[in-house]
Image (cartoon, rainbow, N blue to C red):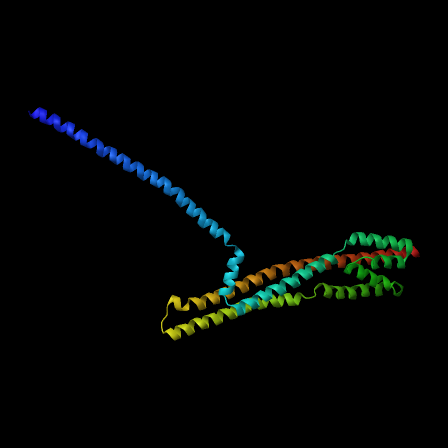
Length: 267
């Protein structure tokens, strides 16, 4: 009887355990399917969030920060950037148009001087744009007064042309200095506003001083960014001016040599 009872007990255990095992497997499979379904949904939500983030362009962020920084000082800093960039672009265009192929100009002047005399050389200079051609014209127009006078004329008119090349650069440096100064002024005013709110509330907390400090930091940031941008353009313009000045000096020396050779050939 004990053996029969034990056998019946074992059979009962197996019969009861199998549904439990099957139920456990079914629950695990259902959980796996749920995870598989939820993973694409999570991925889709992440992609959607990234898409929304990408849709917010940098210009919108700058616009928002510009408004948060305060219209007064931020508008002045923006004006510094606009006027400074306008002057920089004007100088770059002017200097680009002032650039001349000095080697070809010297060859043409020497050829015209040998074939048609001073008047032909003056005509070549008159028809060529740029400060180098203007300097040549001033020097050749004093040909009858001697080489020394030509040299002084070339040197003096070279200074005049240098002033034309450096025109408006002082205004660019002014905007470079004003932009961060306005930013620092906004910083001071923002800190004053923060301390005024602390005095009114009578308590120091992040929410009380956050607005004033935010204005202070944003104005300083934008002022420094404007100054950096204008400084890069300013240095590029200076390099262009230095390049043109070197060409002017070399070409002036070469012109004097050509005139000396021409005088020697006439004797």
